[in-house]
Length: 207
Length: 227
Picture 1: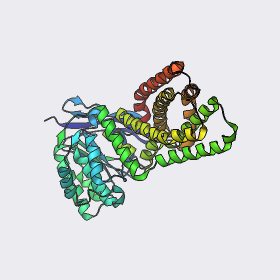
Picture 2 (picture 1 turned 135 degrees about the horizontal axis):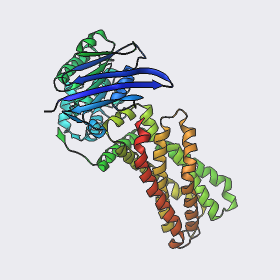
Picture 3 (picture 1 turned 60 degrees about the vertical axis):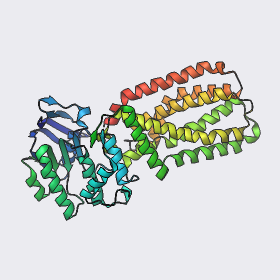
Picture 4 (picture 1 turned 90 degrees about the vertical axis):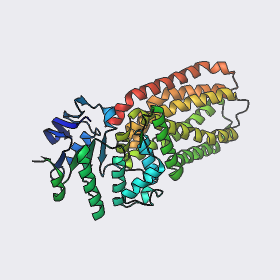
């Protein structure tokens, strides 16, 4: 199986002439976790959004590799997931409708039973037919994790991974990060002391 | 899990189905469209009812109602995605062109639903006798498709702006003007009861506009939607 790798080269970003960060260079390989940390406004979320392809970099590049081949943007959508407070699911659809829609559009097809079973694993038993708008923020966060893992990503980007989660939710995220680190690359942006320990590599922004 | 690569059309259909389901639950766009269209139509009819307007003015009034109703409702599909933070989710999971196709299909469905209501109401209120209905409906369908194609692209552009309403109207007007003028001319011919072939040049322009607008949208949508 080809190993995954991320190469960040000379990455810079500014908004309205103000530099958010400049000249970031880093490489992460499969089995590693990169922790991005730094004070508020140092650009952690911006960096994750650039890495996910949601924002354009000012200068520099982020390249994703499987083996020796670079993954193009189209292919990256099937291999990268981002969990962030800035990404929402559809409040007016039920949890199952959200999962069906988001998996089909990513070429993954699950039966209703498979999705119900996955919901149970994420602590959302019997909530599949409830509108996501009626969920608490912690439940929405669990559903976002479930959605992110549906396509078995090779690159998992997490922005403040345990925000809004209760103790059980934090344990669930801990399991997810540990299991993803075996087969994929995890990049997480956080200021939580306990989450800094996940990283084989740490990128400090705002210095 | 079964991994099965799906076509652009299938993904567009998934987005359309999702939007339709959302719309049926909260009626976010259709209420805006219908309320505007029906109140404008009735108000115009009361204001000019006793004057017995000619075919040219009637055609212009009809398209003004459709045009401004479209401006009030068709942008909602993108604005709502931005406001509810689902736009980024969508960007991460599928290609821009499948999003454009899904949103375009949804806007066409919205516009056709609007027309199912306002066309009979317009004919009922405005005394258009002896119209060539074949020409009228051909003009209506081609112009509606063109209107939906253009407004879908413009809606994606304005969804990121702070003053969405004003920008939507300002951008739409120059882009939609050729379509509007041609649709009014074709509709006027149909109201006069002219033969179908008399509107052939208008139909050619409307068809060309539609093809150009969809082609340009598919080429540009990636840039419009990316950031």
